[in-house]
Image (cartoon, rainbow, N blue to C red; front, side):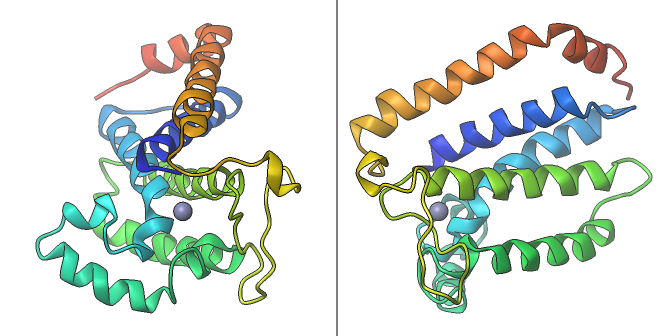
Length: 191
Ligand SMILES: [Zn+2]
């Protein structure tokens, strides 16, 4: 899937999580961190592609990207697996409290949103014809639905005019259906 579809998927999953598990208290810096975190998370598994949008945000990103691509053992391998998910989990669990100001930002929520972004990426890519190597280093590819013919080819009209609008439609629906919860969440927002 393309980066835009991944962003939208992440936002949809984040909103779903916020509706079912609304945080007891949320401040503005954390809300901002959560939104950024989910989008960054949704792009992380594709850092194995040197051309990934995340690399463009860093100075000398493309050179670093090339090195990282080697580390990731090629496209759609470890970064799209359960093992990769676990390693990302351990990495962010360790790094976030050291880099973010814990007195201002609730790092647990930012951490959760990054992992939600990564999970949404894996779900979205599982919908594609290629599937994902969920059990890497085993080479079995997993897809939703299991029959490849019913899955989506990346960057085609099916993705842009069926999948993306469906996710946007879901987002609008879940926001509409849970206005009370979301309103309460935003009303309780403090700086
Ligand atoms: Zn991917």
